Image (tube, rainbow over all chains, first blue to last red; front, side, top):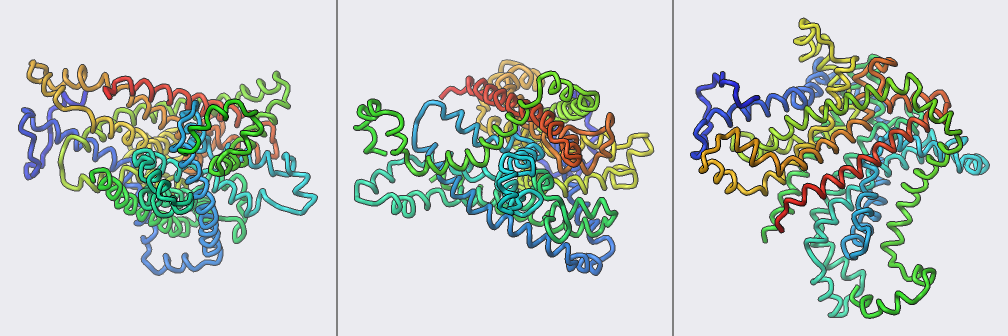
Length: 291
Length: 286
C-alpha cells in the first residue's frame, strides 16, 4: 500500500544516501518519513506539549506551583513509595533470577510467565485484589480493624500496589544475563573455597551489575509513575495519600491545568532520565556481550 | 549446585516434606514473595467471585453496561494493536535497515511510553488532541473529535502499546539474514514480492506476538485512558474504569466479576503469547 505511493518528498536537500543495492532510492525515504510522522503524532508532539504547557505562562507560575504544600507532599510520598519498593523488589528479583537461571526444572517457562503476570494484569484489577484482601470486607479486613491497622486508603496499601506493579523488572533483566554468563566462574570460585555469599558478592554481582542497574531504573520509573493500582487503594486524599501521578490527575480534574502540567514536567523529566540511563546501560551490557 | 547432583538419587527417595526443608533460601524468598504478592490476591479474587451464584455472576458479567465497556475496551484495543502492528513493524524495519540522522535518538525514544507515567500520558494526549489543542484543532474542522470520545481512548491505547510491537519485532528483524533477501532479488523478485513472500512469513508470528502484547497492555490500561475519555457509559467507558466506579460505590461483587473477566482475559492472552513465541522460534535454525 504505502510502497506504491509516488514520492512527493520535496526535500531535495536530503542528505540521505541510499544503499547501493536498492534501485528505488525513494522507498527508504518514504518509509522513514512515515515512521517519523507516526512517532511524532503519537509520541513526540504530546511529549513536547508537556513542557510547553508547563512553561506557557513563564517560569514564575511554574515555580510557584512547585512550592505548593499538596504538591510537595505528593513528591515526598512518591519518593517514599519508590524508596521502599525498590530494595524489596531487588531482593526478590535477584533471588528469583538466581533460582530460575541456575536451576533447570520442568515448568521453567511457566514460572517465568508467572513472574511476568503483574505486567499483564490490569493495574485496576491489581488494586481490586488488594481491596478484596485488606479492605474492610476483605479477608484480613476484620483482623486488621481489630488491631487498628489501616492498609487500604492508606500508605501501606499504596506501597503494596507499587511493589506489585514494579515486581518483575529486576528478575526480567537479570535472568538473561545470568544465563548467558554461565556458572563456570561461580563453580571455579566454589572449588577455590569461596562461600555462597562471597561468590555472589565477588563473582556474580560484578557480572550482572549493569543489568541489575537497568532493572532498578525500570523498577524505579514504574514505582514512581504508577497510577492505576495506586489510585484504587489510595483514597486519593490531598496532602495525605496522593502520589505525584495522582496529583497530576486530580489537579487536571479540578481545572488546575497548570499545576497538573507542572507536576507532569517533573514526571516527564523522570522518564527522560530513565530513557537516558537505559540507553547508557544497554550499551554497557551490549559491549560486555562482544568481549 | 554441584553438590546436589551426586545426591540426586537419594533425593528422589526421601519424602516430599523432608525435601521441602532443604529448598534453597533463594527459592523460599521467591516463592514466599510470589505467594504473598501474587497468589493469595489472585486466589482471594477467584474465591470472592465464586461466592456469587453462577447465574448472578453471568448476569453481572453480561449486563448491558458491562457488555458496552467490553466493546469499548476490547474492540478499541484490537484496533489500536493492529494499527500499531503495521506501523510498529514499519518503525522497526526503518530502525534496523536504514541509516538516517538522529536514528539513535529516535530508537531510544520509542520506549517513552514505558517510562512516562500513564497519568502524564493521558493528560498531555487529552490536551494535544482536545478541540483547541495542537493536533485536535487540526482535526476539529474535519468533524473529528478525539479527546473525550472513543477515538481518544484509541489514541491513548495506541500510545501505550506501540513500544511493545517495535521492541518485539526489532531484534528478530535484526537477526534475519540479508542474504535470503538478496537471493530473492537476484532471482528477479521485486522489492514488494521480496517483502511479501520472503520477509513477512517468518516475521509474522513475531509481529503477532507484539500485537498480542500490545493488546494485553491496552486492555488493562487505566491511567491514560481514564483521563482522555469522558467515561460516559455506552460511549467511551472502558472496563477498568467500570471496576473503579463499582468499587467507589462499594459494589465489591460487581467490581470482582468484571475484574475476573479482565483477569481471565489477561491469563488467556499470556498463554497465547507464550504459544506465539514458541511458534516464532520454530524458524530458529539454532
